[in-house]
Length: 339
Image (cartoon, rainbow, N blue to C red):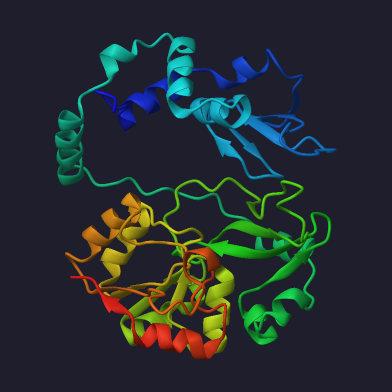
């Protein structure tokens, strides 16, 4: 275990001082478009340049595969470095002495506590997207594979599910807590995506801070009415449950919650039910354990667990709704309060 950790301030200073555009120009022949510079992404077949570098933000984003970040992230994504290797190389490129910036874990913890107590977290302003453009680009039509899985057409219409034939993806909009359209997410329709190494899900625009829940713009009234929020990993699970009458649910879009999502839950003052996939052990994954520890101090928090192997356990990797309404209702009724 390292004697020192890299603080958020350290990583931010490195990323701020390491000029990403200058660095990648040594490798790629970039083409400028507006304030961005483009090249073909080497991580997939990319006939139209989709890997974008923004000089002002000192960041990168691929509009096809969704990879994004700053200098350290670039070294990890595109040069195959581990986190520590990327930090060391980036710090050298930025002429920053890591020994002066690293601090012991104890000092890091105390500084973080002090910062949380005395500074309010800055709100991230997501760039908004024209809804008119969203409807113009994608086709409203029945999504057969999701219909076959039991998701009702009326529910897909409510959640504005569309088809992107140019990328062979099912797409749906992402809204922030103020009901602004801030992203479009796409799920591949290619059944061989694993073999072909095609990303299952991609975001069409930079994500920014994950301070929202997918579907909350639709389900918030039901959440308030029931004083409970059910959190799934995916929007598909939300739509299945919604069609069965369990309308007080959202998607975290992953099996962990960010600090911003946790803060949002704290402000809502409601009971929280975590309904992650069957391969997730809530109490062995540090990030989930920390989230649960925070939430149980301010609200009632419950977890849905596959103790009877109804979902196939860890090997099944099924959402609590994947095997039908009857199984879901058994799991939901047996949800366990965390104390």
